[in-house]
Length: 363
Image 1 (cartoon, rainbow, N blue to C red):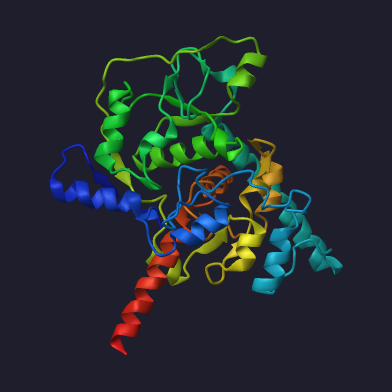
Image 2: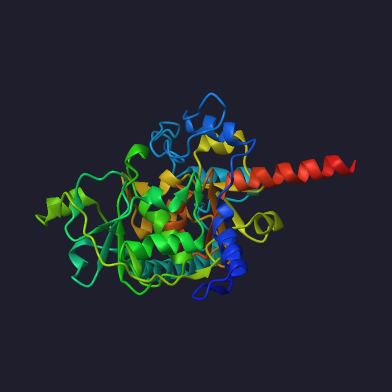
């Protein structure tokens, strides 16, 4: 289901608008669902009923999700309730069952090996950083940076809760001295959200959508860097302006029509309470926090356990309210070798409203 690319090296008005709209498919202007989003985030509304997307953006660590809840077990329960399938943990019976178990073990070993390889393609360890890497700190208002890092707070890529257009994103990156050929390493946290990899995962997803080939995420943060006795600085590095030539692709972006078509496995990465309060039909629940161990991603074996209910041969669309924290689960799916896309519940609800209004008008 991979889509083609949109060549943005020579921009004209039509291509610019088309690509910008495609990349911004997750993002919505303020709508009738702003109030509902605000309520789900636990605040950030003004008197007019709108919500402040920068007041935590799909907030991590709100306390809505109960850590005491066995998040690893929830996907199995979701599978039983919504798909009427087994949890996958039952013992096989008889000779056929034993043979099936052996085959499954072999497949699991191969999958783990492939996923470990994918992990190293996407995640880079602190000890692996070299002088060739261009470090990009996407934290907001960071007091310290890894020495030599460029700093672009993730908010600069957003217009409200929407991604800016492709040309605007390219300009931001180029003005910071980043070219589309640079071997980028992203790090940073959404500190108002309680930390964790959401900011770096979201910017990684954005860069992959811009066609940036050589980009990885650092497995750690500034404190981890300091703990190894490596240098940090209170000032970010300034580089000469560069030309960033995007090669936009929509292969990582979910769309309303595609989600509605039922062709993909739809995963609700919001909290269990949010899932139970209403979700996309046939979506299954795998909370984004279930793929985290503290503020870092779990290892491939644990991720495999979280995703055992999914079919690797079928595309997956993961969503949260705006897609911001959903990028964490999308990233985990990418590491595990799934053909994954990112979507937003806002987009789903807005399109449902449009269809309802259209239907009402025809009656």
